[in-house]
Amino acid sequence: MPLEYAITYKAENTYENWVSDAHWQFLIVPEENSSQELISTDFTNSLNAINEPSINGYGFQTIRVHPKKSFKNITFEATSKVIKKEVNPFDFSLSDHHHSIYRHIESLEFKVDYESFLRKTYFTTIPENDSGLFRFNRFLSIFENLRALNQWTYDHIFFKTEVTDVNTTLYEIIKNRHGVCQDFTHLFCALARQNNIPARYVSGYLHQGNGYFGDSQMHAWAEVFIPEIGWMGFDPTNNLIANENHIKVAHGKDYFDCAPLKGVVFTTGSNETRHSVIVAGQQQQ
Image (cartoon, rainbow, N blue to C red):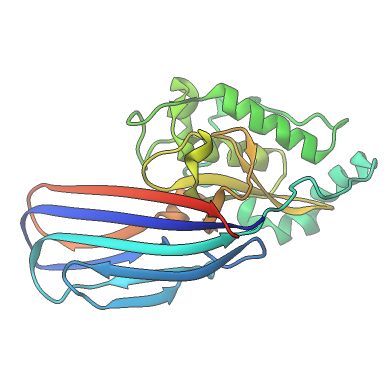
């Protein structure tokens, strides 16, 4: 039975001194795909600045805001309604020819086709001393190895808020073994790519009614390309295959491509930013 979700995103920025000019880009609108339907979305800001819709380099919807007057405080609120289909993530069959599949992902043609999601980035580079953290077992299918990687990442990092930030590298994550969904996802993507599996970072929302780990803002998980199956979502923070509780907004190579808010603000002094997300869900009748 389909599930209907109501998502409320709020942000408040407060500045010590007057802001003379500011430009923001929000990447927070749920996408339309085969498993989710965007029913409506509404975005407002306290200064009544014009909201300019646009599309980013990966084809996802963004909202740009450029206030025309000075301010010290501004709030933003987005409300969206989404219908998610219940999909069986195990509705596929795999051949027994594991070795031919592994030869395929090691081919030059495959690497060229998926280069964007095989490359290392600032956030998905494994330190040299940790290069052997997780190696695929070639006697198992790629899918089985990815499930094992999901479990390994879940076991290796302990979910803890306020110990990392948006600039934390994998060196710190591997060393300290604490982090949030962004950190779990960066490590999972890095290790999948190290084993020749295209992996993309996904930002979105998580309905936490079932006791899943997440934070009060946006959730992150990974999508990997598996020959014979296609792109499949893995949530290493919760050791899950992404399901109807995961509401996708966008994907990219890492957090930088999917940051929910980017901006340039012209002011001096200190500032404070607060975010919150509420995801309420119910079954459609």
